[in-house]
Image (tube, rainbow, N blue to C red; front, side, top):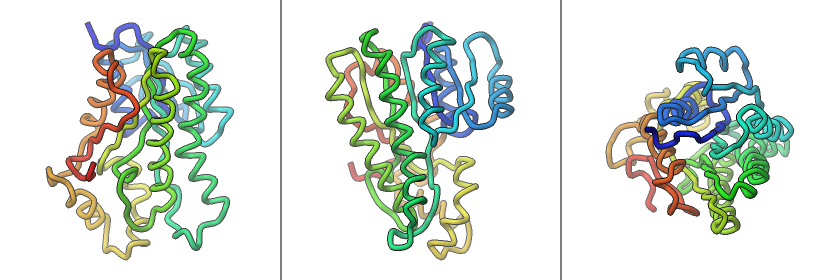
Amino acid sequence: MGLLDGKVATITASTRSIGRGIAQAFHDEGATVVLSGRNEEKGRKAIEEMGGGDRLHFIACDASNQQQVEALVDGTVAKCGRIDIIVPNAGGVANTAPVAMMSDEEWQYELNFNLNQTFWMTRRALKYMLPQQSGRIIGMSSMYGKISTMAVPGYIANKHAIIGLMKAVAKEVGTQGITANALCPGFVPTDMFYETGPATVEAMGLPNLDALAQIMYSVTAIQRPNTEAEVAAAAVLLASDLGAGITGTTINVDGGASPY
């Protein structure tokens, strides 16, 4: 028996990287998993690589779009009959402009892509979780939800805010069988790092991506990057009955980088 047998989970941005790792871990533990992302072809490929079957589904979703995020939650219930676990995993560094030079449009997109999609997905899921008196909400923050660095002010502000949102939700629904927590991964060399890292390298005046990676994991106790599987293992804990008493808090998977 798996830790998530009979549960239904949906995860934004789950066709690759950390989201894909969490989806795989949930599926391995017996959950029905609805993957999502902008590209349907990538969704079909992810399902095929994960082995297919009737416990894997895909719904196209641009997580920066409120209507599509809400439709993802509704679509999960329409396909699977219920929703037990959500992981608003989408997000990342959308731009590297300093605060003094950031436009309103850049700021708003960063909000939509990170904090707002977490809020939209959580609010919609509670519509179903509250009547069933059970649910697991796992917001995706970061070690940069607790500390700061150069060149990514929007990302840092959003990741701090996601922790606050999860704490607030936990207080609101704690007696209803629902938990809400934030995962705080450290440096994981995902596709996003290689896609957005060059802009950060330029903004910080570094010579290359290797220099950026070294800065990010040099502050850890383990002196190496974390892995997608390590983040996924923490997500399984929070999603399962083993995590029933864990709510309103953060789980660091950062190799000891965060001070608390």
